[in-house]
Amino acid sequence: MKIGVLTQEKYLRNGLQTFEANLIPELLEDERFEPIFHTVNNDYPLSRTFQTLKLRRKIKKKGEEYDKIFIPAQNRLRFDPREVEAEIIPYVHDILPHTTDYSTGKTRFLRPMIDAAMNFLDAQYLPHLSHINTAITASNFSRNDLVQRTSFSGRTYTVYQGVDDMPDLSVNDKQFQEGRDIDLLYVGIDLPRKNPQLLRSALEKAEEEGYTVATVNFEETDFPGETYTNISDKKLAELYQRSRYYLHPSHIEGFGRGPVEAQRYGCIPLAQDNSINNEILGSCFLTISGPSDVLYHLKSQVHPRDRTLAYQHARKYRWDKTVREVKEVLLK
Image 1 (cartoon, rainbow, N blue to C red):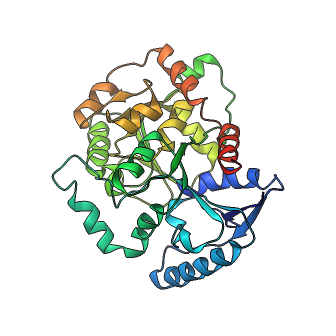
Image 2: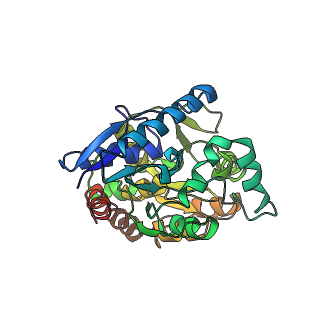
Image 3: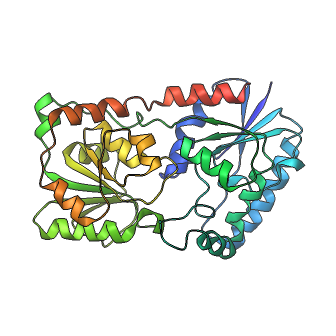
């Protein structure tokens, strides 16, 4: 069996490509897997359109060489899999924003139509997913979303991502439990599904109350508190290690690496009580619905046992397990 793997030679430091960077090189060590290099520039609509058409032709041609082709992110499924001789198997991180509401408001069913109309290219992968026989999903939530909100009727396999690519820090028990001078940390940007209103309000009110807040982003932002931009993994790990709580206000995620990474360093996530958080974070997070809940938790001290439990919970998300389970699906 020969399996083609769609990939690129360089990876960005975002959620989708962090997954690809940790998975694909491991797959390619097996002689049954071969790379299909292709990069799509999402920044410019004209070049994106041209590269999408180019990818379609490339995959159709490569389909003659392979039994299966693995697509590491659903948004690269911008071609009809029925046109390809090989079986196409994608990893579905999520099907946001086009079929899932950002909030519990009345725009639940209207928002997908608006998003799809505004960005036709990004909406293309949704009908293509309905013609897939096998899909790997990032969570049970993403699997249910795929099955319930599209006409997909194939087989699904949930394979979680790892977080153990982050560096181990040499600290003693006291430092792990007590050496935390940042009260509230947030890693990410303020997309609509990240719940920017709660995010900003919670950071502002926490700072007003005298708590130390910090944010980490890949570009300059105007968030309250100290902002760290484009830092190394080691520096990020140190920030997690220094933080008491991690703010995770998102309405919805397909997996959500940030709060799991925080757990790995004993930093307790503050997150909404919803299905994806309960699935991925287990019982090792505290629930919030507004800024007042965030302030309530900030006034409390974390029991040492809870930091240890969070650390132990995050340890189950390992890249070797991710690689093994993806392989098992692709080689069936």
